[in-house]
Image 1 (cartoon, rainbow, N blue to C red):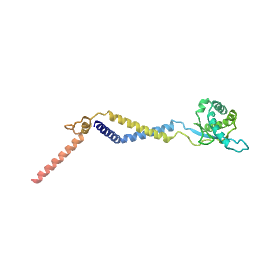
Image 2 (image 1 turned 90 degrees about the vertical axis):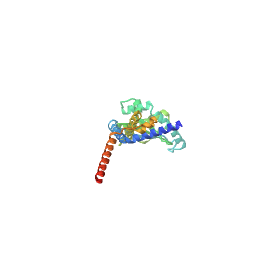
Image 3 (image 1 turned 90 degrees about the horizontal axis):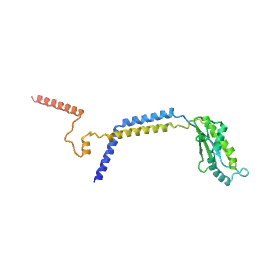
Image 4 (image 1 turned 180 degrees about the vertical axis):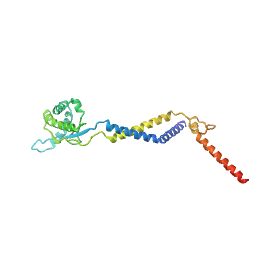
Length: 252
């Protein structure tokens, strides 16, 4: 029985909490819009735009008379994983640095590359991401060239083919303004809800007779009306008084 009463009280509290949040919908809306606006401005002015350029290698070669057979395809599948692992090793990265005369070490350069091997293919995608579109293209192209010239010699295999050369990116790859806007709006909404909920939980003031009965299990003997109620009562009193005078005068 006590458990049922506790559950009922919890349900009532959650309902009160929901109604409280609905009553403050204008605060929630303002915080949502403010958060979205702040994050959008931050993404636009505070984050440098990035550009991506991609080159592709096709890791398969014909073993006899320029005819690709099943063994060549199977070998290409195995070699693709090896290329993906070795392309970001420091010997390859250092050759890219020397070729482009870059002012960075191989650890910094490694963070600018993303390699991807689509499922069930022997295609290796080399993507470079920087804040300079020309540099992104140069990095993607240089990595493909160095991989084709250096890794086959190291691995004692045939060289892969460059299936796609890198090109100059025309559009920004990031940041995503819509993503930052949604994140800001959601964060603003959550923070506002958190503040309102904390204020609600810390407020132990008895506002109504129902609160008195709810928390203490007893009804108040009387209540003090607020100013608006007093004004309404006075207005009703004077109206009734005037009606009474009119009735008495009409009888006379």
